[in-house]
Image (cartoon, rainbow, N blue to C red; front, side, top):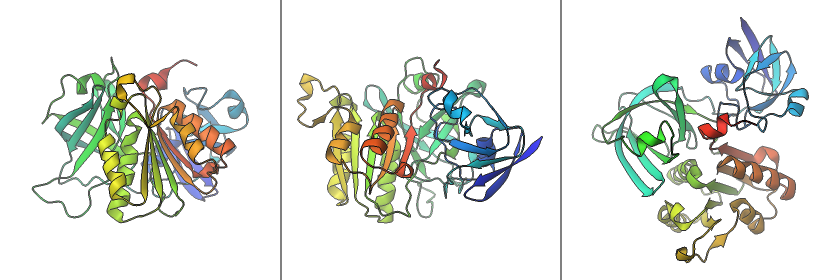
Length: 349
């Protein structure tokens, strides 16, 4: 049964045919906000104004019973049972590029930290793959499993040379026992072929704003933020930005040198690394504590800023809560991508 979905206040409409609202929106290039697509992050939360939906499995923290009773839905888990009207922020550009499935070849696997791999992939020269810096792809694994990773480099710009096909960089943290990460850290080797699908996600730079930015990352959440910084550099954008990168120990700052160099080369960028559990041998004289609390110490008034936050769900959730309630950040100026692992997605509430 096919149903019509109207999106307010954007005035968008699309058809849903036996699928979730978000799946239909992505398929038809409709820009709705979303992150994990698995009912774990809450980024796609919207208001059901008219109609009925049934919800699939999702986490309580993404949508509580009280929120559901108040008419809120997760479009990634909601299957319509009638024509519906929803209230959701439209995301210009989120559906701009077609979602494609394509093979990629492993170029290199570097390990800048014991539990982090930087995976470089070669894209097919004859299959253009367009995306916004900050978006992610999904690896298509056996038995229908998928694993999501953000691109750590901006999209290829300019004509593709035959000798230099476009490449993609991903930052992968080892999750012991993980279906994909165990493979990356043990058997995967250069020239292996993998299959990906993308681009996905509504986490990318809003270029229509000139507000100063806080780029907030924890762990491998640096990946999409790095892509955004490099995209800004390539486009000659000069909005003031400060990168706060939080890790536990100095060894976890696996691209510290890249961040230092970027800040030294780009007058509009500052870099503030923060360690939550520095070791004595780190001889760390920099900032310590929870990274989002360091931001609030430095910038107690965020009312005129935009924030782009990526990393562990607990960090993203705390930053959103505290920045909006204590620092005056407008809710609509907080953009986030919580790196939800499979364990995060399937944990019991």
